Amino acid sequence: MKVALVNPPWLRPGHYGVRAGSRWPHFEANGTGYMPYPFYLGYSASLLENAGFEVCLLDGCATMESDASFLAKVQRFAPDIVIQENATASIDVDLRWAETFARETGARVLMTGHHVGFMTGSFAKYPFLHALAGGEWEYTVLEYAERLREGKALDGTLGLVHRAKDGSTIVETRRPNIPNLDDLPFPHRATLDMSLYADNPMDQPTPSAQLLGSRGCPFKCDFCVWPQVVYEDNKYRTRSGKNMADEIEQLFRKDPFPYTSYYFDDDTFNIGDKRLAGLADELIARGLHTIPWSAMCRADTLKKPTLEKLAQAGLAAVKYGVESGNQGIVNGIQKNLDLGKLRDMMAFTHSLGIRTHLTFSFGHIGETPATMQETLDLALELDPYSVQFSIATPFPGTRFYDYAARNDLLKTLDYSAYDGMSRGVVRTETLSAEELEQFMCHAHDVWEQHRARRGGLAKRILADPIGSMKHALKRPRAAARAVAGAVRSLTES
Image 1: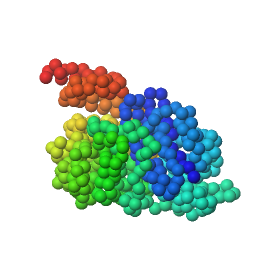
Image 2: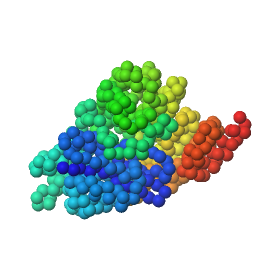
Image 3: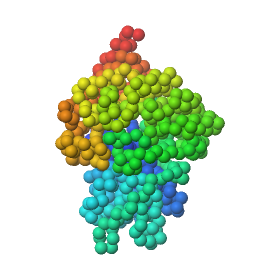
Image 4: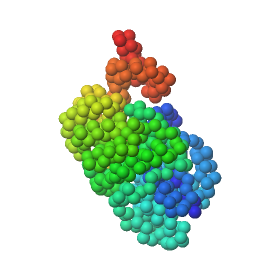
């Protein structure tokens, strides 16, 4: 039996969508280069392969090809089953794709992803969908395919939504989250062009591999989709240091693809000093510590000696999630990050030679013009290597969404606008969505000027003029100001 696992193209003029593999599906400007690896599709593909299925994983978001070209690939494979991942921001596009797959291939279509939990009540409206699988869905997909191959009924398949013989909807009991992540095989990469995947905002060497070292998060940020919608709990589950090192060794010593760095795209990678010290020991003992790597982290969950040991094991860059420069807002969204500890850990991280990338968002509960300025001021004060500014987006199923809906703060219920990169869909009590958008653009402009003044852009232009021009084309107004600053920096040096 043949199974196609698909992440279909999601494009709009001048932009490309990132869906599978992203905690925050959204549009990126053409040329940006960011593309997450589709972890859930990859793990599911490996489970299916190990169970004897013929598998093809196709990622149209990564290839950015035309709809016709992508459909032709699926048709050539002639699958019996299509496993398709969705997201809230792309759900209208996703449903059109599912209908096309069912019509043009004759395959059974099983839809998975962020938005599945909101489709159960309307499942009858989608006759082209054979089933839905929500939550942590890899083993649901495996059991579904095995039952079809063996001619068994789907009744009792945990995590599945399907139809009874009379057409009524059957909602099975939720499948428990995977307790031991070491039980999962390493994710499938063989049928993907791995050169297309990149998550290295701190300019780590490319091509770079993406991995997961944990799932879940014990913190309770009100905006975060994964703990609230996908996992439905705040339990933190991890892979062992040995298991992670085994995958790294396979990628760099056995895989024919020439990776030069790697990145852990966990919800929160750096929890558990003992486990992470063990990973460092494994990397050093195996001679893997010379490979630079990075991770998505919090600034307050690791002891300094552990971070120092990870640096010795190759850790070259970290992303720290901050969200706001106002302590009241940070506490109000239940992130509970002490900004004083953030400042201290940033200084220590930089002292180790580790580059930092900070993420901020505007529009959280309680946001005002003054608190937005505090956030921008903090970004400039901490002076990371790079930053991400976005607009807080209240995804359905989160406490943030519930609050915004109750208080009439939602600008639209058109989910295609819920990407947070360029469009605001929520207002605060004192700010409109348009004002949030304007301040985000202002923050980007100020940051580019800051980079120019510290000499960052000047050095980059001298070292990589072509790359600098590509970056400038993404944000021409900000780049023009930054180039002026860079010229001044060069003149004054």
